[in-house]
Length: 328
Image 1 (cartoon, one colour):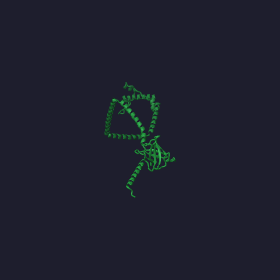
Image 2 (cartoon, rainbow, N blue to C red; image 1 turned 90 degrees about the horizontal axis):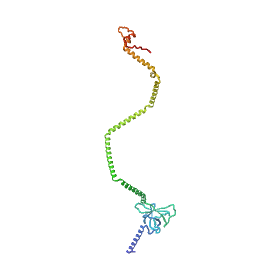
Image 3 (cartoon, rainbow, N blue to C red; image 1 turned 180 degrees about the horizontal axis):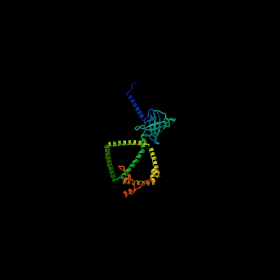
Image 4 (cartoon, one colour; image 1 turned 30 degrees about the vertical axis):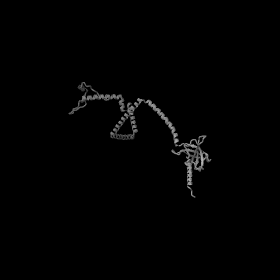
């Protein structure tokens, strides 16, 4: 049987119309032969959710948003979910609106309650919530920071106004002069520092020698300290104390007139006798010097010395006083 050109054209046009309707329905999240389970969720705000948005369960796409309508009496939004991958969820399950990324659109994530054994049927309503995305969280955290920053800027503005009111033209000139003086002072300090650097460089050898000498002196002092530490200082001080005690005893004996030195210092009679003996010895020596013949006789021919008589002595020396030595 031969098909005419007109029939072929009609079949082609009908196929194109059907394909267009199916594609349009698919893009709208609907299917011509749709027998999937449908759930409904009420939201105060869908946060930019659109039809054909994915519905996920633990990241797996299990359905799409097929329709969004508004309740006329409450103004709430009713979202119809078409489960393309049927999964039994309980009535107490929650459908979250969330953003999968910074640039992606909104989606719905199902959070099933496995403890609730009452399974939701097609046409039942699920609980709906909105999960804040990353940008909303940042906005909430930045909002108090922005308020505090604004308060700080306001305070800084007031402070600058007060400073400008205090710093008149004369005060500004004084500050400029102070900064100039400070710059000059820093330049002088820099010059002094350079001079000190040059002085240190020029006297490096002398400084090294001085430090070496100090090191030797320190070593010698350490050796002396070790030697002093090795000495029996306690024994030396004990001997000095004993000698001091002995000396005190000797001096005490002398003070009390004990011993030869003590008697010599304390016995007045002995002192008088010694003084008298000294005088008599002086007179004897004087007489020996004036009249040596009385005591020393020298003769070449063996002539005997004449006997001394006090009369002759008086005749020879009328002015000389005869001294009699008595033996005590």
